[in-house]
Amino acid sequence: MPSAFRLDNVTRRYGSLRAVEEVSFEIKRGEQVALIGPSGSGKTTLIRLLNAMLSPDEGAIRVFDSDLDTCDAGELRRLRTTLATIPQHLGLVPTLTSIQNVILGQGGSRGTLRSLRDLLFPSRADALEIHTILDRVGIEEKLYTRVARLSGGQQQRVAIARALFQHPAALLADEPVSSVDPARARDTVKLLGELSAEHGFTLCVSLHDLALAREFFPRLIGMRKGRIVFDGAPDELGEEDQRALYDLSDEEMMADA
Image (cartoon, rainbow, N blue to C red):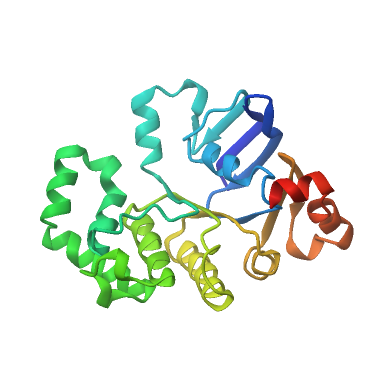
């Protein structure tokens, strides 16, 4: 199976802080992977490296046959249109309706003028497709509802629909269930896995909830202090591995808080 993402000895710094340090791994196309680890372990930075929003200070990243260090600005823009991202706080515009927020998913590939036109006057084709997507994620009746009037769980579904409307080769989600109750979190993670299987896109999700990661993902990548400390199947994650990931020092607990 060809690779979706390949990282070779990647390091990313913020000043003197090494947020990601000497990370190497490969994610195959269509694979479903959960990034696990405590806050501050480097998961968000890793997601932003994978979606080509950040560049490494050292090492090399290859995304769907493209070496990021050799891509020009136009190639990077085109590559990013194939990588849907759900940020931790969803990135929705609360004053816009569900359909308008979903249309923004193709903003990178349509250009400014067309995006503005489609935002104000959605085509019948777009409206039908988005209605179908919202039906699949369970909120088709919220097509013309302003996002500010939706519940947290419904807003999650709009963010997922926006990603699907992008027709992605890969979907990257950074703590997409951090703000909802456990039942809705489980439903959302389950839905993401089902959609990945249905559409064939690669799925990479960072999660604080280890139980969710173990239940729904065939591969876990565990991070601690910017490094990979575990990479394997859920049933391979033993007590020693969990201590290596989550037994924090006093200093780390203060930083996490």
